[in-house]
Length: 288
Image (cartoon, rainbow, N blue to C red):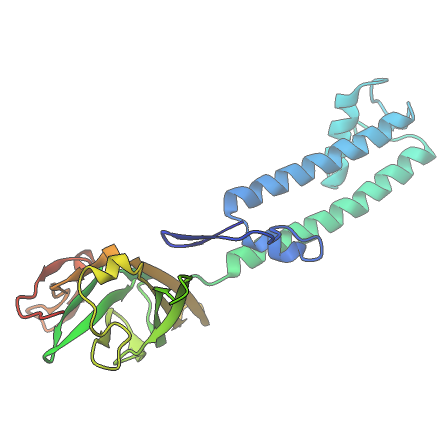
């Protein structure tokens, strides 16, 4: 089983993707194309099953041709949808029992799929934009790891909280490889208002897990940065969360972000999100 974190992929053995005890989790975790395919397959399977039941007793459906599977199949679809055009109808006690069972099944199926569709539509998604690369540049004379993000919605976001972690590959004295998670302390991990952009900063000082690294170490030690962001979307009235990862090759050392926020001649603050990933050299960076 695969677990994806951006471009980073983890694989599990022994994990079950579909557990009959948790059909809800399976349904809401599917992508929209797979969810639509599941709906179509279940609908067809129910109709195929009940069409077979109608065929077990010839004459159970009035005006259906004898032995015609297509007639009873389409009658099943109309019954499942509780439409009923009147051209065909149950003609025997057996036919009434089967059609009544199908109506109950159809009502339950429609209620379940409607509920799942509503849940999938109503889930809030974070519309947060990320710079293509993290950077390391001087900030107040200290080498600092920076990640710039932006509010991609036209509405205000508030109560922003961010956490930055590093997955670092380590080799023990016994020769065993471990990937350890180390927290990277941010100089400003909370933001009361998040209308435009937000640059997250981690100073690489003596207390940093990245202290003493050179540019080569970011690749050879299989570093991967994991950024989690949680904000309150005022339009949705709910907290939304997102996650982004950067590999060692996605960190631009000696570069800084180009200014993306400016003030026009009328005094209006403008954020150009097209400049979110733009970089420029930071000639003063000293990083060993």
